[in-house]
Image 1: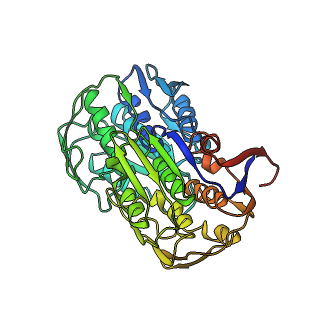
Image 2: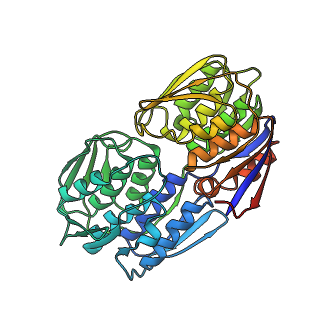
Image 3: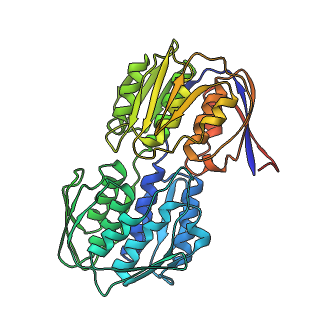
Length: 420
């Protein structure tokens, strides 16, 4: 197991290229199950979640190979319709194979998923959506078992705007017989990226980028090459880190439209941002203003960037409130920030950060992917040395984050440790 040793405080300065979106990659990869053949997914990030999903697809018979951020997938021969617990327990997105398998092969057996531990995230929306398309769903021995002769188009209303459920049921609907209409579908860029790839494969989808999707099922699809969108959460992390350190950082390979909510909050905090095409430059000279955030489905402020904002607000002039309406229990990182000197009070579904406290290095422990990023960022502005344990969490969603931050002026090194 690895840990990070971080020395602070530092100022970030320079240029960083943002990786392809981890969450988009995990939506695009299972689409290869819908049509046999060879796929090339460009701009795929080299991180642990992509490796994990590649191994899962490999257990189904897909050959997967990542070379220079291009992922090669060959789904010509599928040998299994079961996603076993050993793979699925590591990542919730593994459930995305359920829809494509039952749509194309009429059967699927998928272990109930795992992933980051920050509260309950039930899969009932996935199952209800597939049942609306005619799949028979049973849960036995910790596995979801889905069967269907052929799925049938239908109206599917998502009670909650869910990225995962929209992705999964959409992949099933494109091969269903007849028309499906989705209402309250998720708007996130990762959903739009998948829908556009499916259209290239031959799917018929109207309303892409809206909450209402109309899908006319087709009999067959074809393999394609696709480019993965930039990672908006990685970009948000680097932007907030730059502002925290009163830095001057330019991000390349970004989609500014995907970052509008984060950019607005950064500007309210006092940061200066210059957006040009696919490039954003951020500069910050003073302590930030205290700015409240409330997470919301896209295009609102993303829940995956709220821990980073809490770390940023530790430096603010005044108190700020961070409310998470998507995952109200997602504040497991707060006790670790306390170890660095933060003063944060967790209330029901929110936390209040009192800025302006002196921060000093300490040993802290990661609890999930985005919490790990917040701890690294907080350590960079703390006085002295910090150790961040369990960095396998951060490896799930960031490609070589310690090397990228070091190139910007951070002092971080990775060490192997026996500590758990």
